[in-house]
Length: 252
Ligand SMILES: CCCCCCCC(=O)SCCNC(=O)CCNC(=O)[C@H](O)C(C)(C)COP(=O)(O)OP(=O)(O)OC[C@H]1O[C@@H](n2cnc3c(N)ncnc32)[C@H](O)[C@@H]1OP(=O)(O)O
Image (cartoon, rainbow, N blue to C red; front, side, top):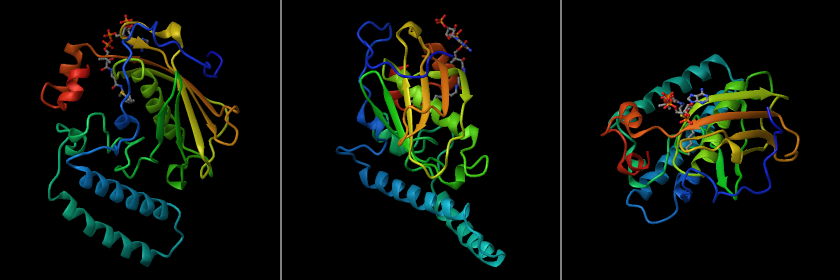
């Protein structure tokens, strides 16, 4: 693996994949402008926050069995009203449909998804930075992050680095080296970039690191990926013509 530090600058002009501006909605899935579904999006985020807090409490609690069972009963009662109107895997969330690029329920960055930390992503000039703090729900070794959770966050940040150069793509290869354990309850900083020489018409080879925000140069995890923009035929085969919102169909 090459030196795990991002370049200071990256020339996007000479890349083969056409430059495109990653919308605010992609880096801030809640979005900020006028939106016919703004209130529902805010409510989805409130529910995500509440369920994250519940999950954090449920994975750190030491209360007795009777209390656990009482809470389990109450939690089961919450499912019915939510299931009154649901989507399947073949339909995009209506909240996402209302704002191009929004992924409210993405498991890494979606504020409406209780299993998402959620990681906050900012796209800079040649470097993409993700920030989050992981609680006990993400524990692998005691007091440290599960390796699969690190891989998920890495996959996401690599995907943003790829998308910042052109069209969103899919991961076809992912390689990680876990150099040091990633601490829980500690602000983290993920950094991703795309080396110029790894860029072709459809493919990039982005790299990323995880560090703490206090020690951004002390690499805990380093990774590289290969991202491919599916051809129109591949996108149609994978997603089907009617399953994607129009903004997403148009970009593959
Ligand atoms: C902003 C949003 C961020 C989101 C980040 C999250 C990203 C994800 O998690 S995506 C989900 C996980 N990934 C997947 O499910 C993808 C599954 N794979 C597939 O469906 C297919 O591999 C697919 C359609 C992407 C590509 O089709 P496939 O037939 O494999 O590739 P093909 O079209 O022949 O080749 C495409 C290019 O990729 C290259 N390639 C394919 N596999 C690899 C690999 N393992 N390593 C290196 N290069 C590869 C090929 O060499 C080719 O390069 P080039 O065009 O330069 O010759």
